[in-house]
Image (cartoon, rainbow over all chains, first blue to last red):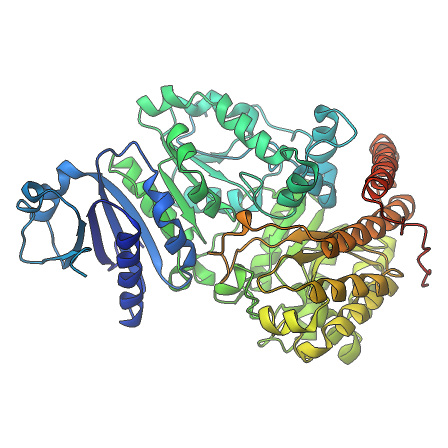
Length: 117
Length: 511
């Protein structure tokens, strides 16, 4: 199942309420498109800390229709992963330092900023 | 076999056959009351017999399914008793855990916790199991830990414990189609996802569901997955409905019988819907199923049935009577148990959160359906363990009063009735239930009606039906002593709340 097609949504930066709202909107728009699987990848300061699940718990528990996969990676790995992108990926960013943001450009990468509305 | 690459396990409250009496397993959802914890655990969850490798005689069905799936693919996987997991952990590649209620957040554990203010033994036992494992050493050698089962969602409330115990992945939902992918990744040394929710589009088809290879706890075998009734508080209803073919069910029953488990529990969210089209009953399929089960088993029980289906089955087809003739043939058993959901006595709430639970009858008739079904079960020696839900969203005091009134009408019928506080598990599962539990006076009225109803009938059930063989006498005595203690504490609690006792209102006896 994990090898099937998933809508890819990555997140990097500060995971605040607005960010969670944005992620929820993404879930709804993917569901409206008739897709049934979504893969979220969270780029974190440390992979040893799962507290980010607290922030997204509500949207995970709200879901009953989509297959959801949650992955996490160290933020340092983001540029490397961007280079390896095979299909389209939406990267949602929130208060990401400009020097990190500069390193994440790719043809198939759609960057959406939380604060930009 | 010196090593087990993939260990499947859980804590003692799950890895037990509860003396062969499934109802006793419910005591594992409470804290020890009136007896030391060791005695409580012995009653609720005695240790399972194991072989030289530490493989239990019987194991939870979900673990047996995973074991079969992995063994069919050639993996060295086995269910291991919790007392023996450490033997294999250091050299294992994956530890898979399953549980019905890891942290006692589900009903009825959560009620016990709220009422007694003490942690139920299931959560304590699981925590002690995890703390007893030599996880840090095994993790250094690359062990991956995957948790799942019906209570997988609870880990989202405990991210600190995910980190503390080195849990790699939480799988929420039917795992058949995702577990092999995870195992491949773990074997390849790739990082695993943190969380997976298996949506309705990714549940396995019948042919993708493996047949168990070893005995399940108390011979439980599933006959259906999913439920068509669509109650908003229930997670099962979100999954597509699948009927397991009779030959698959028979194969699993024979696996149990071959390993010495001659009792069986037919598992479905609504056993009477086996073979049904929607909610239109299929008497032929049910009769064939029960005749087949009767051929192999000495006792048969149902996991769950809906009250509307019980009423419909008897009134339209005399089916409960016919099934009783099959189940109780040759004097092999004279009663059987089942879990049923009353949920509410309020027509307004029934229409709102479970409009199809009454089908084929209108939801407006819900209280009558409950009463009629209880009467049918009483007459046919079916002993229900019934649940009702307090604190449903939008519940008003009038709704709770309606439930109390319904309980008064159920007094004559042999049953256990357990009140549960609402835990969002279906479409309502994003509600923050735990911060909103408010116990009102009306709730207390319902709770004490349930208490006295259940104590009164439990005494009779123990005297006339339960634990009749001589080897069960010590257990029987302990349970009777426990009920006396509950009576005493119940009276004390009523007195402290200034409530007039209601237990003395004798229940009319219906024959």
